[in-house]
Image 1 (tube, rainbow, N blue to C red):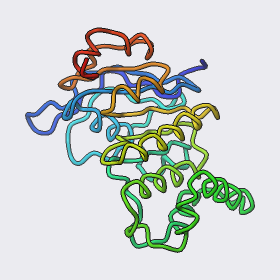
Image 2 (image 1 turned 90 degrees about the vertical axis):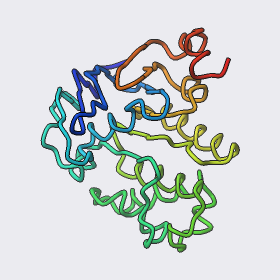
Image 3 (image 1 turned 135 degrees about the vertical axis):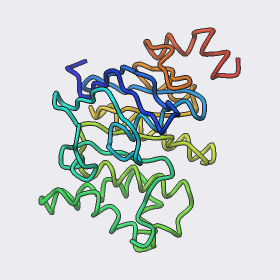
Image 4 (image 1 turned 120 degrees about the horizontal axis):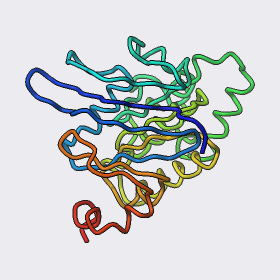
Length: 240
């Protein structure tokens, strides 16, 4: 694996007197698929929002570096220009725009028209349901279809780093399998991924490395396959 794409050091996030993240360190190296697992309320989504600068008013301490440069003060809408894309929890599609328009929005930083059209065709091949409904408003899609669209839209900018927040949440088992198949394939293409996911088994099976977050702290880290077979992880997150 190559150099750091993302490095988080001493990250603390506090909402008033509530400490949501308590001084965590994590890193993602070029080409890695790293997963951050943990129970609801552990601070996983807060961590992603701190990285992308999308938190509401709160106190944030620590350093966040992307491709060797600090993200401090970066506006979230500039991150796509830096080739950092996020698929937020709850999908975040543009509900009053069509599928095709959503995909075009994902490519708004690009000016290679032929390349954009080729990428749209690629995602329509991967997600045929999107192709069938390309002129349909995104708000009328099922949760699974919206998740497909959100992922395809994020990947339209050719990100160096893709952040995924709970991509399996609320989806049928068949749809979850499809989404994770795409995540694994995207990783094989060399795109660096940080995956936040409650389905610890699927996440660790897909990942190279993992972090466990509990009550705002990193309590364990290591090789994903080792963690999958760790008795503590099995007992706490795999129901074994």
